[in-house]
Length: 82
Image (cartoon, rainbow, N blue to C red; front, side, top):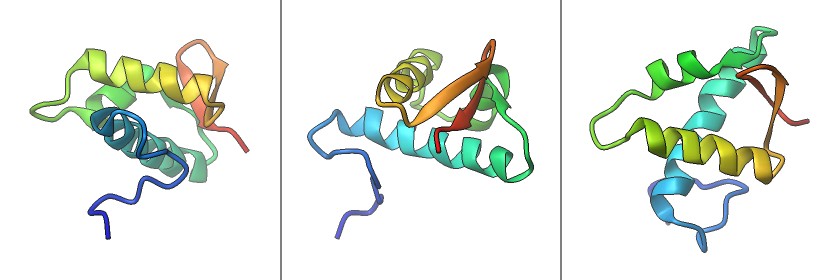
């Protein structure tokens, strides 16, 4: 059993990308439960961690947008798609 539930993210993808993307989905979902989107700067602050760079986070957000997991409702503000 994997340590991280990758949910809808395939294990065929880069594991670091999948891990960061799953964490981003979680923080966006928590904001969405309050009826709010989550701004990119807040995602960066919440995801701040040794070993995770801003480039990793940006790449994960781009990947989630491409996979239609999240949508941008206004400039740099994201919600879960669905």
